[in-house]
Amino acid sequence: MSLSVQQLEKSYGSQKALHNVSFEIAKGEIVGFLGPNGAGKSTLMKILTTYLPADSGSATVNQHDVQKEQRAVQRSIGYLPENNPLYPEMYVREYLQFNAEVYGASRDRIQLVIEQTGLQPEAHKKIGQLSKGYKQRVGLAAALLHDPEVLLLDEPTTGLDPNQLQEIRKLIREIGKEKTILLSTHIMKEVEAVCDRVLVLNKGRLVADKKLADLRDKDEQIIEVEFDYRVEEVLLQKLPHAREVRNTGGFVYEIVFSTQQDMRPAVFDFAHDNRLKTLQLSRKNKNLESLFSELTQA
Ligand SMILES: Nc1ncnc2c1ncn2[C@@H]1O[C@H](COP(=O)(O)OP(=O)(O)OP(=O)(O)O)[C@@H](O)[C@H]1O
Image 1: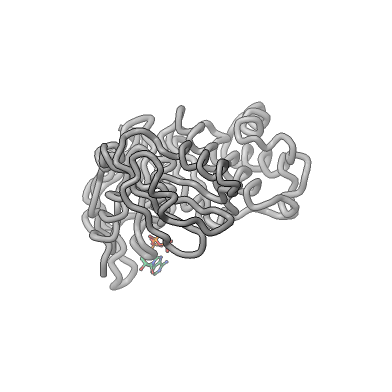
Image 2 (image 1 turned 90 degrees about the vertical axis):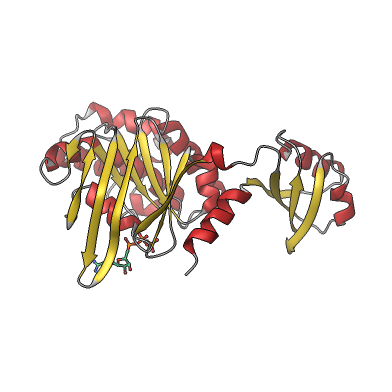
């Protein structure tokens, strides 16, 4: 197991942040860690990085105990904290060199992670001059410098615009081909777009641990689409396999299809044929959404 958490407990004073949390993650999995604000996601990540001690229970990273083998754990883990703290006055390369020295990574890894995270065109700039998306790449590059087996990403796409978001998600999926990833988020679409499995945390308790494939209803899919103009719902209803069409506000529509076939290309073609622009197009997992709202209601 790349990550193992057993009966973990953590309180801040009288406030319980984690209660009896247990799960395991195998090598190569990309796992979404979903939960409302204050659920305990960051607390668990901080314990896994050895930054915070747990009150009781145990956790291992790459078979190393987080309490007893802190050095080995730190070598096995790359961490992108929430808000990705960076030094705006430093140049990208300089920052990565600084991190390589602090974490004992070899200097030839710097060029490698720059290429891996697509930082090449911006590598000569100061961090403060970069867009948010590129700043996230710098954070990811720094987390990858010592070639860790496990990556912990705490809300990696917060504050990114839709294009940057797509790019960072794509990059995370690429990196996930080689690494085990635990990614915290409260965005269900993110889990849907990137992860193989989801853990749901609510008020410090693990309330679900599911494979995304098991959550997909095999014969039903919901496509959410935003056009640049209003469309008559009866027109969308004529799409093959369309069962239900809802306007969910503005020019955003939810179309329920009764088929296993991915209907996004058909919706895209519909827009093109009707001289509409598609501003966003995504597949939603009804079951993931209902599971989440069911399990995280106050
Ligand atoms: N240093 C701290 N001192 C006291 N309470 C804390 C501290 N850090 C977190 N908490 C509390 O512990 C609970 C869990 O917080 P945590 O940051 O782990 O949640 P989270 O799931 O990461 O939330 P978010 O999605 O908002 O980042 C919250 O109620 C929070 O207020």
